[in-house]
Length: 251
Image 1 (cartoon, rainbow, N blue to C red):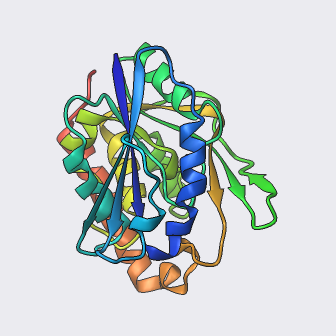
Image 2 (image 1 turned 30 degrees about the vertical axis):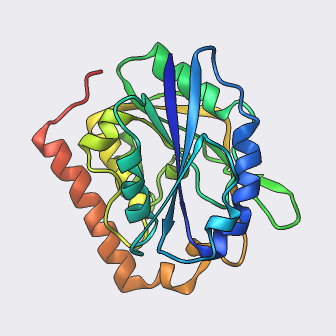
Image 3 (image 1 turned 180 degrees about the vertical axis):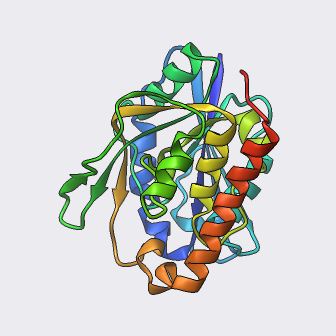
C-alpha cells in the first residue's frame, strides 16, 4: 500500500480553476494499492475559495495567514503525516495529464536512491493550444548538483520545472518544505533537493501549465530586478550550503 499527497496552494483569483485541476486528479489511474489525498491550502482566510473546493472525502482544505504559495504549501504539510510516501505539487491553475502520478510512483518505487521526480511541461495557452520547452534533458536520472550548475549557467533558469515535483515525504520535511520567499520558492526547493539527492526527469508531459492574465508569475512585480536578484541569491546560497555540508539522502 502507498499514499501520495497532492499539495495545492490557492488564492481567490486562481480558485475558479480548481475544478479543472480536480478533474485531472480524479482521472489519474494509480498502481494497485496506491491512493491519493488532495491537500488544498488557501493563502489567506477569505470567503472566496472554499466554495470552489469539490466535495470529496479525499480532499483536505485549510486556510492561514497570507504569505505566498510557498508558505501555503508548507502549512499544508501539517496535514501530510508519515503515513504518506510522497508529495506531488499541483498548482491551483494547472492540470495533470493522464498517467502523471503513476509515472512518479513507478520511479520512486523502483529506485530507492531517487528522492524526487520532475517531468516535461506543456504551457497551456488561453486558446487551448499547448507549447513545450525545446531544451528538455533526456529522460532518466538527474545527478546531484546538475540543476544548480545548469541554473547558474543559464541566467537562473533550471532545465526542469519545479511545478512538476514529486518528492519523498520525509525528504521534503527534512528540508523544511518550500522557501519563505515571495516567489521562486519552488526553485529554491528544487535546487535544495538536487543538492542532497539524485532526481529523475520524465520525458512524457507531467503538467499542463496554464498561461492566463491572473497568473502570479506574469505580474510585473515578479520580474522587478532588485527583488529578483535577492531571491536568486537566497536560492543559490541554500543549495551551496547544503552541498558544502555534504548532507546526502541515501534512500
